[in-house]
Length: 368
Image 1: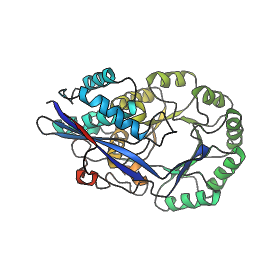
Image 2: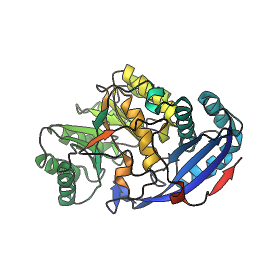
Image 3: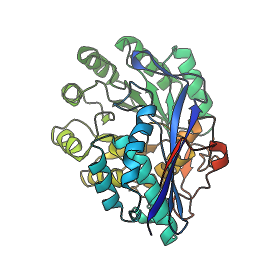
Image 4: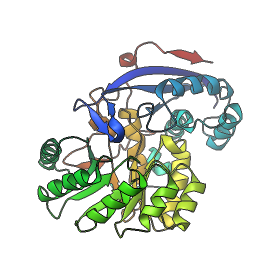
């Protein structure tokens, strides 16, 4: 079986709640998502998706994904998509870095491998450890009353894990956390996520003020690993690292530096399902917990997240996000779909969803 054609599509995903606000006044209302359709010479088709979160969240952006895929795709035509190690070698030989763009191609290969073997991707990633798992919702940064109202609406729908977008004035941010804790109870978890938005001094102030709060976790207080490690030395709060966890080497350095108890593992940030599985397995072996998700995306991205989550040890899985629940557009039938704060994984072969190619329109470009 050989890759005979790669089609690249684009569509915009809009945030389901209007404006998604992070620290440093980073606001998202709509994002360009890129979908890859990989076709083999015997007619099997695999899909992948990548959707960077704007232009200032990570060293990645929507236009960059498409440009990088255009550069890489010719090197994959004629390769066996089921030999994913060889596909990665060819991608790395064609273009250094740009793992977020390679993620969509890697995802499409896993989809084909599942369809070729008539197995769900979860089986190929090591086998299902759980049939369902808790989901979290991110609460955009804003006036405390709006944040409390947002949490209340989702609690009524069964969500009990909330990631609060912070990173402004530390005292005001801590007050936000206190108000939301007061509006929740012992079954709820609150993650204070600055997305690297605090300066070191402000992060230490916030961490010390947050220490008296129950059910509270601190996520990515500062932009660099060194700063986050320093904050960790000044607080007893359980800490999650996100943006800085980019590869195995960084994960090992962060662990041996005592920088965190958990990581947020985003599939496209680390280069696809292949490397996400590697890092997930290492994190589990080190005794860390994980949030499984991606930077953004729709149904295809969410399907990949669900398969990785289902194959994670339940004791190690902290929480999961279904990105398609955050957007208005759906190209895979709005599947997999969250229900009462719980996610489940498709059981069909490959990613287990049917992509509506007609909804994507004509390809942006094709390589064959």
